[in-house]
Image (cartoon, rainbow, N blue to C red; front, side, top):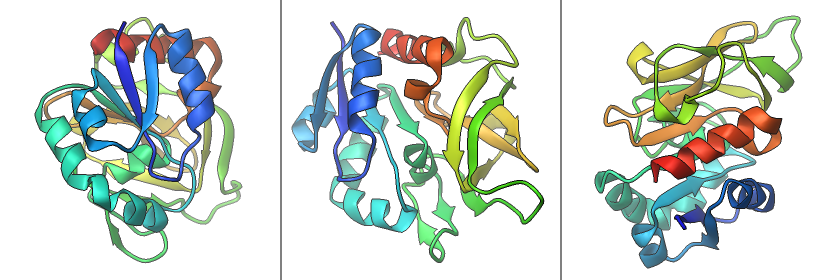
Length: 202
């Protein structure tokens, strides 16, 4: 059974992510122990809340995360966890991220659309990756966010339209660091398939 560690840094929807991964057939541990993180087959960086607080909390684990990523094993960031993988965010004043994927986190522009972007939206798959195996283009997934990721085409796996087109799923140049702006654990069968694909990658 694959050992997946959900990083516990004080901000995250840990229980529902855990349930989704267990349903996908993984042995799941919630931990902030650097040794457990480094020995995992796969790592999840969850996140709910404000970017600045999250980066402050995760700073003690930055070198552990960098070491894990350098090993080539897969890591999945969810919602704020995806945003933390970027270079910078403008939320709460310009704040540095983990810089695992080049790009920035921006607030949705003012429009007639409500912010936060909340609910189900369809996604456009822009490049092939094992995490989206068997997921049809145009599938609906569940979002809750006020800020979006702006990165390059080569680092965008999936895009979504909400007043502006944004990266709904990202990947680093090596292909082992993946982020989803949407919540797979709240996205029904589609989300569960994505989590199963992640477990299979580990």
